[in-house]
Image 1 (tube, rainbow, N blue to C red):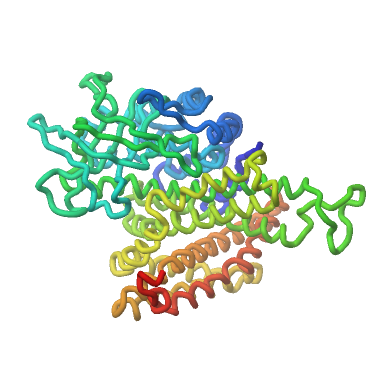
Image 2 (image 1 turned 30 degrees about the horizontal axis):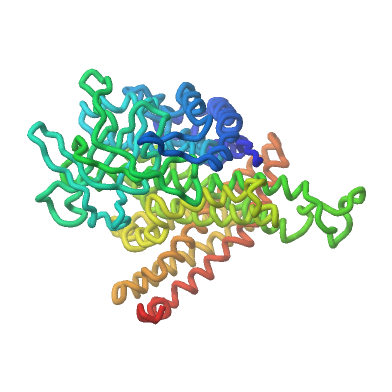
Length: 591
């Protein structure tokens, strides 16, 4: 059975040596000294390693079942969920006014990495609740917040988001779910939603669904969509649970992965709903939840790669296959371990350099969210909004790739269920699809985000890279990092210039290159993170304190990324510059 060890040392390195969180002026960060974050991460590691990890394979094998309208989760999930709730782990960054601990989002992100790596399907129940909590917290009335949030913070009640319908996924303007207004101010919700993660289960007393629907007579398309709170059980004025609402589970989807999470077909039959936010402004409220979810999904992508990598490393060190071409390394055995072979090293270094760069990238994104919310910083909000499709799209694409790469280290054993490696690939695969498929993320990045506020935020990103390169350009110790980063940033800028020059006369020239651009942007973001990590590692070595081997390893990994991964921006640029002609050359019937 695969194992998982929380990478607390590397998490601490990013938090304190790279992001220097305790010196930040973001509210709450002044309390995040190394001892405090260390204590939190060590305790969350125990939950991840001892409670969640053992249930990962159980959830995969048993899945969820629907019996007489009741959804049952896998064996052990309910007890584990109760333990997580009792420890306050669902309330880390929630508002203290509603029972939360009020910690920064960055802390919840670091803990969330551990939980997602340990058991992605299990962690989704709390993760989706947090997203629903955020939407109600941002857009709900005082009465709605007081009624729902305290129980959602503790996960006594869990939450969902209901968008997709059988005939519409990304194009939500096509939805048919209706919300008929009632004399008492409520609405009757009728329709069917599909692919609803954690749609129903036996882990909580109530499920608070956030449902997109159209009020008759409203504007056509997406402009006529509103968002509603539709609880499984109606909540009385005194907070107790009343009658069952008109919402039921039609089916549990049979999926490729995340079997331990109940992905449901939800039927709404004149269910009582309560308008959340303004009428016909449902997408604005839902995007509060979706943007948070997209960052969370990016985290899921690299977290699955992390746990797969850990197991691949152990297998490569233990499995004896062949001899080292430069000389025998295991003379007392019949063969040398796999890890002596250059191709295995290449594979593992690809994984390691991505995972550690991704960790820094997403923690930086979480820090920007804290900056945006805590200091009402519009520039930080604009930059993290620009980078959200990159975090979601690039990290999940590569996270899946590296789960497959870890599986490859095992050879034939990786394809056998007994070893458990296929689960990581199967579970990671959904991250490329839900919360907006990655092709849509690329279109959002190029078609919308680049031009936001006149291109102010993408220019701010380029300025960050330029400043790093300028400030460290004369430092010989950082030459291996500054040069490649500068070259990659120029490739990214050239791609943006191509879109400006060619996208106006033919939008397909930009859209045909959008996926390459998203990956290109991701590479440059990881390049910037590796530059910062290399600088931090050099500084720690110069101090002469701490674990020198850890920092030397960090520098070696940084050099690998700069030499072997970052130059791929050139390939993406060449592809972008070919335009749309070859992409659009065939008529539909020629496919």
